[in-house]
View (cartoon, rainbow, N blue to C red):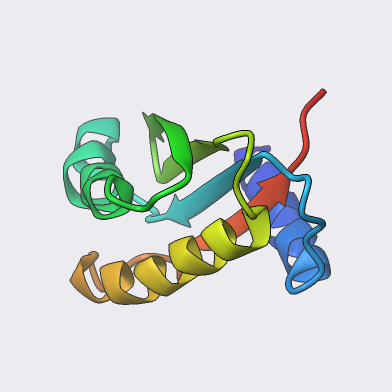
Length: 117
């Protein structure tokens, strides 16, 4: 069931890539590493991603979830920033960060934009 959910997230991200409206206030980064405990996910994936994103301007808060096999990082953007520009900076940073993540992740981290009411 969890894999179905993660595949849905991945396919949703592929469908919206490059067409992110500027009013989207949240970004999520999903990374999957099968066979990992929550502690391993936290130490080897979630914390490095969180630390690398900490200095990007326009980020209001970062919330992380490390569960078996998966890391989910939720980024809330500040109200008056260009969401497309911040998303671009996050994607650029993730291209650098992925080089320092374990080689056995299932696929490169997926960045998803969302607007929550």
